[in-house]
Length: 63
Image (cartoon, rainbow, N blue to C red; front, side, top):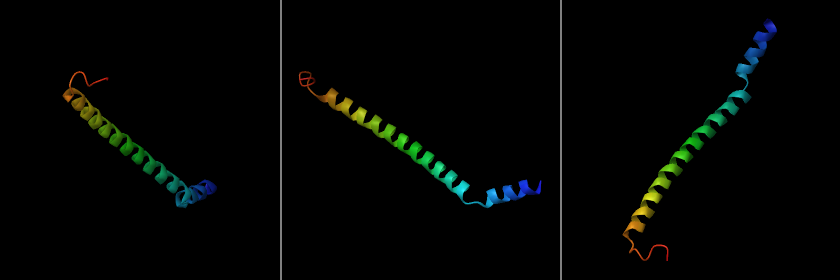
């Protein structure tokens, strides 16, 4: 039992596990932010192109 407690203490004091976990959390947050930004910008660009297309004369589209 004492060996288990010593290993648990070593694991909790080790810097390797928390560091890897911190990197994983930061990566997940970056991915979520990137996906949200791309989606937001993509919607705005799509709306802009739709408005431009609607404003052009009918013969100019697809020429």
